[in-house]
Image (cartoon, rainbow, N blue to C red; front, side, top):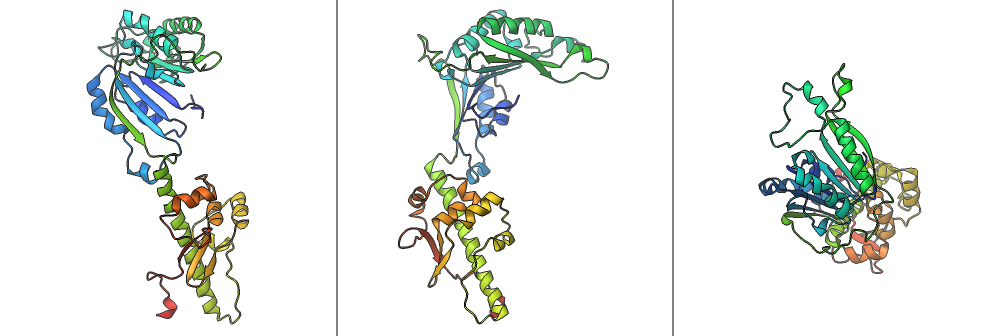
Length: 353
């Protein structure tokens, strides 16, 4: 199953060691990840693995991401899980006793009613391929054959207005294809999609889970983060352009060209600095105002900066850019360009030594 861009909220019921949440958090479309488990100690010991690391501050996400871990039973109703796009139950249902298994569909499919549900469970037909044919885990209350799982899943889908498709993971060895996958999976899709407001009930404000961990990731939706990235990329680009100007001055000096000429800010030298542009990017840069010099100042128009790919992707217009950088860089008198010193003490001119 591939995640679609519209999937932005996912809850993993029976999240255990949170491995699935760690895999899911890399998807840029996801903005809320929730894990629920009955084992509070596991949640406490694994929560820190979900925290953002240094690289995610240096290169933040485009969209916000919040991760929350709740302690509670998957057969309890908690309104904070209403309206989710996807609910996953990976190797969960076989841990439920008969009473909880009977309540499970009404809570997940009836009350929470997400757009999609993914349920995986062991395939008992695969078990004879293991050294022992006993249940795969001492805590398992049952393990179903393919027919048993598909019968149960089809009944649940029909009752709660879902359609279901079956697949699995773990192919059997050659000669044992008849036993099917090691783990069987049902993918349930709500007929008609997620209906806004369809899950409202008399207990829509019911909070029964205990929040044991929460973290938020830096993203370009947060003004402080956007400003940090914008100023950093801007200063890098300005410095590249300034150094390119110096390089062209050195080339002129070597050629002893007596004729004064305007500085050439064509795209060619950018490539020497490691920049590789598509045709569309080249056109956008060429159609923007060129850098210029005013006395001992080197000026790069904001429109020019916004044309470069790493700044263009931030999707800010000139006015917003000006507001974000005003207290961090020096602007020209009309605030249309970034100004830096044309020369600084770190510049190295070997021909002058």
